[in-house]
Amino acid sequence: MDFKNAKSRVIIPVVEMTPMIDIVFLLIIFFMVAAQFAQQARVHLDLPKEQGEQLKNKPKNMLVINILADGSLLVNSDEGIVSIEEIDFIVSEAITDNGVQWKNISIRADKWANAKALNDVLVVLGNHGLSATNIVTETQ
Image (cartoon, rainbow, N blue to C red):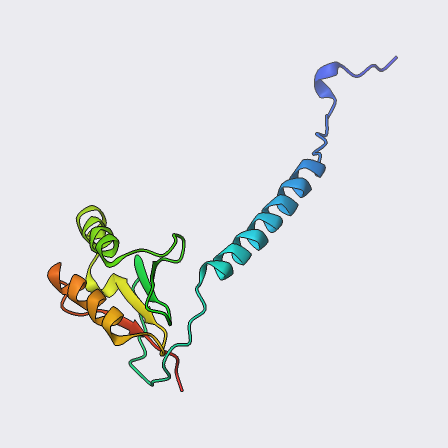
């Protein structure tokens, strides 16, 4: 009688694909929801239509200051309306903690916003040694 010993048998492992498919679907759902939140985080503003300078290598914006039509201020649109004093604190904190430069700050001002609000923000940035900034516009 020819018996095969246990060492010569080939065992083929069975890979269960169900957990892998579950993880893929969960990742797809996560990224779809995250994309929706990223869209909702942007504040809708009626930006002025100017040609402006088209940056090829856009620096990463660490700080976005939104000026609404009524002159109220929002920072990164994840917090509520802030005062100019709070913007002063946020800018100083961003400069000391993250080393933010003028290239990393963008101002999005509604075209119907009061110029005083924009001027106040520029004064705050100037007080912190930021002599320039990016002002966001829509292309024509």
